[in-house]
Length: 502
Image (cartoon, rainbow, N blue to C red; front, side, top):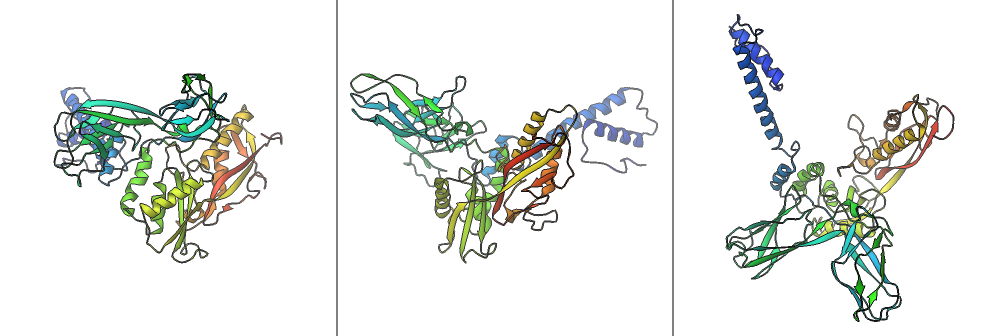
């Protein structure tokens, strides 16, 4: 007698599949059973199927949450990457130089204390920045102006009482916490942040910080043997904020709330402005970014040897979106024992010299190559791709709406990064571009861009004339040199029905 169906699909474990399998099993064991009468036996089978559905669902979820590539909960991701000694980056604050200008030369000196707030002029949600150090304008200064760097952050202060117990933990109330901004003092003195207590002695005033899934900081102190136990009242001073919203445009930080006086008590009128765009603001490392960045971190450890090591470690630098390392093996024009690292900043465009210098210093000091290796860090070489399309619209489609949709689709296609911060695989350096067989292609496919425009809502078809769809004035793929990265240039759209610009 057959007790188990001949073929079981163990990957199909929902209620319907379990119910069918249980019914098949029951009829194979009891050939005369009637499962169509809605009796108690049917109720019991459905009950077991329901319980099985619930149990297998939780089993699958738990299994998924135990792997970096499948986990969906940030708390679990953070726990898993600890096994790799990888720390996810928290929010980074934007900074910008702001000029503080008085309406007239002051009779006495004017001091703007640390923590002074300046902001954009938005009425509902202004972006606020703060002075991190006091700024002064001397008495009689003409012009009465001074500049200082402000940061898109807010300073918080909390106090707590030590219990004199070992391994004390304190969860700070405000978020999002900014890394490396916490200052801790207790009755026995100031404490210093460390990665762990392995090298701490009983006299070491140390603490560690772990940022949780809600961007709140958990502060832990030592046990009296590895790390001192704090005494009395503990004061925590830290900063919160950051994020990409702080990258405001030039001349938008124009408000300074409050009233200011000079050293003689005279009220002074103050105006502020930022001549340059703010930079450096970045959201916390997303789950998708962690999935990409965490595994390679154990490969490079604390050095850069292989070509890919340089790329991995360059992307660890705040502000770097993409990187390509070339040596003589990939480019015969490069000298032996030397390499050129090409950098694309967040959002694309040209990296600042400050960012290039930061990448170079990070790779030399934190992830050093061999002593004799000559490393150069340069801006990426871009290949501009101009798009021209003759578009026929669907009946009732609005030309302006379609044009906007096509522009948005092309912009997203050529974006350096996806919205979650991960690299956009539609575009890459010519060296990395492969065809369907995995062989080097070094070209941007004409058909990929054509399909994107053709599939845009409101588009009926693309003209099949020779000039109906062109990239850089050719109906062909765009060749990329090994170091070139494609970027979107001009977009020319023609209405196929009228021959006029769309």
